Length: 616
Ligand code: BES
Ligand code: ZN
Image: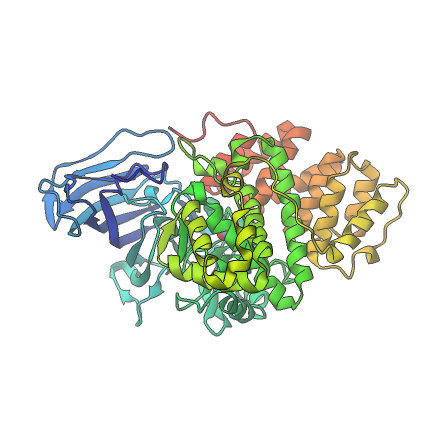
């Protein structure tokens, strides 16, 4: 048997592979659970005919199992192991010859320990009319929805048959026709995903959801109160992003590309669920300054969703490539490479910070992180994004843009529908550039230290950047080093939001914190406290906390009750905890139920309240 490539699954996916999944699930808002059945069609991979199928599961109640449509009692949910859950073992008495498929039908219900779902009561939604639910499966939370081979190395097509009293959105294409009426005012919503996808891209959401067009192939879906603003935020850029991406890689393969704007407790900026990207409402900032998140999630349609890293160890293949494509799209839209470099500079600073935080020799600062015995949520950081980006970008610069542009479609085409590791990526690159027309690049290519790139800790080599958009930010920051600088709103009035962020980050990195007076004047003069842009507001609060401006702490606590995006929540808690531990803990207790389960667990760890966190 080939060595197992993914240490974060307990499934025996070397012996069996899921080819098709049918999810027949009822969304039970009263009980806050999904119940129904999942049918897995698993293909035998070996002639030795494995007589057992092992699936991942985590806190799922399994009530019965059918094997090839016949009830069987030969199954067992084994004891829970740390991080990876309770594997479900099903005996297949006769096994199956290589290439043959068996069908497992599993009756199940999710439990209140499910880490993939958040349930909101009507009072927790903005129009208070209906409850709301959504899923977030990446990295290994799909197993808490239903037993499955929860590894990005296995891809399956899907049928979704979802019953709910409210509109349902899923990571599949709606089956044409009106949803079928069911008893009690419920409806059956059907979707299909014909492109094979890994389990972490399975997604559902349901609630009072309405839609509006934002492009030729795109709608935005969200609550009625949020619809107009969300439509305005994206409608100018959506088609441009799609067209730019298609030019860089190749035509979009999924049919529709839509965006679901979620309630504020959504724990990420965006999640690239196929057909429907799930997004935080913090990107609807009324200034179109955060749409790069959409360019990012759209890019995953190629890097991640079509071509997938085979385990979380090679996660950079998803995120590093996606950062690269995102920046290429942004540069194409602006018609200027300065925007590519500006975003890359921001990324570099974020990478420096992430590496400093881990410690430069930490395992988590490697491009390929050893995930044996690790919870992928713990290893998650900027490193795979920005170290990954810098690796891809270094290859682009090494061979030259024109040559690299030919490699991009070759790579995505070769691995479309499949999953790969870093070495397969290396081999694909070497294979492409071994063609006679690239003979002149031979020495350059053989100089690449692949192992070093994959496994060294700390910062990679720093490239030269075009700093034209960043220089003004650093110049203004420099002025703030003098205690008597008197600022004016016009300092930043012509800037884009990200320039203000670069400036704020530079101030945050000063050797000395600002004085309380300086910090207050910065917030006031530049209107940061009234900003609807949470990126800016939270960056400002980090400065204010470093300055120990206690008048800002109540505002920090309020913000922590308004957004559940971990990018903001975690640094705000970590810093509030340093300056006012009691307020930090009190605030967390107050808003505990507002946060998504993953965010709650992470914030608990950040506040040192863990112990009660992840059950083993
Ligand atoms: N796929 C990620 C989100 C994710 C990663 C969820 C790992 C769970 C585990 C998504 O594409 C992402 O990177 N989102 C970023 C957006 C940003 C880089 C533009 C985010 O959430 O901030
Ligand atoms: Zn991403």
